Length: 403
View 1 (spheres, rainbow, N blue to C red):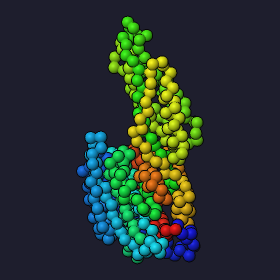
View 2: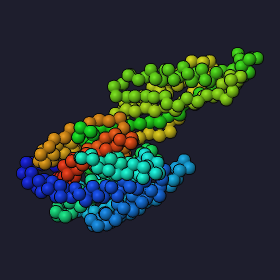
View 3: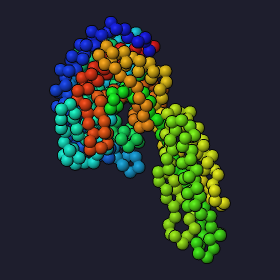
View 4: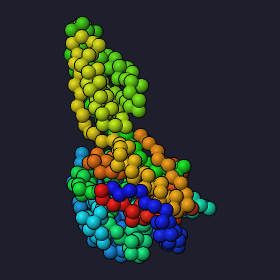
């Protein structure tokens, strides 16, 4: 990546900021349109309506678009992945970068929520389902691209915008598509909204979902319990032992969230299940924790019982490595030229930026406007932050270069 930009770039940043301020009324009108569409992860038709809307806007800017259908996962259907491509004017051999902007079209809310809680603006706060997470962020990405095109600031090789349909449920259908689309990208910028204090997101924990199956031996609980091996009791000991791993490694958290055992009280329980989630900030810590979980499961406390650990899913961490550090430095320099400051925050939440980072792509997230109370009826977006954050995103895209 090129050296950090100099202060000489400041007048250009001011031009983009003025344009972003001018764009705010349209942004708010468009945001109201998007929030009015129910697009829960498990409502593929609603998600695809959002994708229809985004497609029209991208075409108006000059993007070519592709709709990639996703297959059903676990008996559920999901919407399409939208990918928009905008060729730039700087070839790769002259430093032009292939830059991915990634956000998601789905929300956590059920059908009917948009009518029950329609978009509303009160002072400098906007409310409504998905206003912050992630419709406000997606719209910021589109608006930033529009400003760059309008002002002939396309000094990149290619700008790729991806809108996924299932991020809120862990991207089960879109993940392979996203990873394929992002292969070979130089940088990835996540369009999740900035933290409540304005920080960008520089680190997200990785997550592993595990199923621990404890097997014992059934017996009549009243006549010959000694012939049984109680899997429920072994599972109970295992819950305590696994939870005790918390605090072993800084930044690693483990939770036994679901416990199932037995069918009848007069049968010594022959099988039990534990559903376990473990989160860690680095791949090394995640692997260490998984090894410790397996070792713990190998030592069941009840004679005659065994435990098997199956990994159901693994989402890599978004690590704050050298590439991400360089991106944050560039973003801070761009923000300074725009007249404000930004910091970098770590979070335990997972997003599509985990996937781009897991591919080894330098990744920075939280480049949407400032927002908060995600996944709740109180979800909000700071409309006063919109011009600054659109200008920051556009300026960062303009300044990114290949090494």
